[in-house]
Image (cartoon, rainbow, N blue to C red; front, side, top):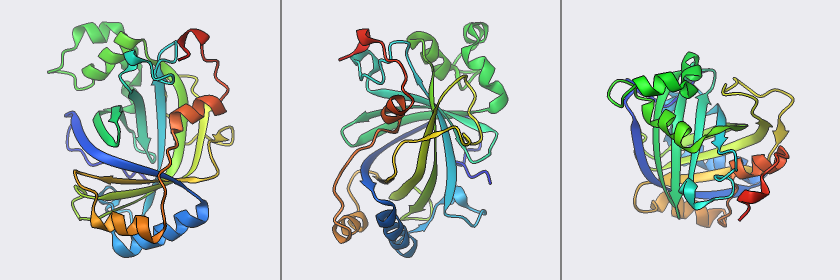
Length: 249
């Protein structure tokens, strides 16, 4: 199954929305999932698959000094990743910036066979923004000396509050696992070698502008308390990666 965000071409996609995150037990996640199935509609990304969830695998990047992990000012509180949905051959290049609950994201997709070109300096010199939609991402790789750090995968349940997927969106991530990245690939599954990041699940409520009354009711019904789990930062610790002391804050 290859559920993925719908895109008709390789134009860069921009999004801005608010995200509230909660770490919940597996049992509570199941209760919330039942609530979402009753009160929310299918995710359009899963249209035609007759499913409510899909696999997500991401390659997270960082500098040699782990400036993103340490939230150094130079990183601008951004995260860089290459993401695969299900077994699709499209890979999404993403930069995500967060300020409070407001999340801004820029992304574009490439074919998985184009991965070697991400670090090809000759391609970077020859390309321009107008003729290569991934140029902006490769420029950042070069500027910040980004390199593979960890692979992270999980199973994502998703529902939306409107059929176009432009309003409220609820996701629940389960079986969150990680592995030290050895190269620039994004595997279709990490296998038995991956380690669990947490035994809990991550609930995310995503919306534009104002918190929907639907989500207010959900939070009251289940007495949800805000808690944040950084998948990337936790994966660095779980994988026992050596973080240079010079970058420690």
